[in-house]
Image (tube, rainbow, N blue to C red):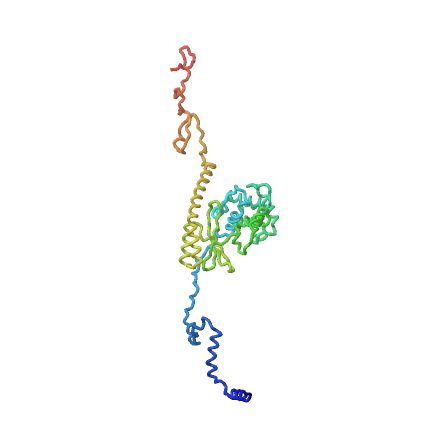
Length: 388
């Protein structure tokens, strides 16, 4: 028995090794077992065919080249201080007195350019000084020189670089005598200083930031966010005040660039329609189209506020006309017995003589046109004329 087993082992050892071609045939079988799955149903491309497939793929189109913008001449409405002051007034409206009028970019521009400045801007200056100096009593218009000097001297270390270390109100300069650009710079400086010095403004900021703060401040009502952007990464801002005031749309160049510009691109409904059409047709990008849709959807609101603003300005003009009537006319024509009230300013009534005019009132008795004089009797005495 043992001899048979040894003979079998010797016979197995004497066998020749397995041919190599059988091993190569067995290898794919083992690979398919290991790498089973959906890939086994897709044939592998040869190296030459794979390169041809990559070469056959169409290249991506080149990026759109924007036509150069027409030359732009900086105007007064391009001043970024205008947008800053309008949004400061709007965002911190609770810090200002209720009697302070709201304003948009156009209203602020008119009042700043006027000489002397408008009453609305002067009232805004007094309100800023009241906040900045933490006064208990209001700073009144026409009596703010001392308060303004105190504010400038207290924040001398924070003067804007554009001032060059020189007080804009030095010498005989006043808020009325400096240029409109200097007025804007002064108001902006006062507003910036009040962000850290005014107790009222700081309380509003702390209350707004009690919750979780996002890095972009999208959840903060005090922040000013862009309205949208175009394909060239230029951002657009809608700047408007409260209480149906005017609006402007400003465009900021690419914030990643070195020379950032701030231009006014629309200030009326017709201009905003033209801007939306330009974003849709000439730009055509998804961001530009989305911004154009926002502009078109906001036009009905702009039309409604424009109508309310027109009515309010008409009422204000009527009040101003009665407050300062034209020379030669009084606001109220008082009634007299000898002269009727003039409901119209007609020139033909200026030549009537009230001394010969009879009263129009019905007294029940007839009044002679001319009172009769004394009567002389035959003896030379004067007596009253007898009644009829």
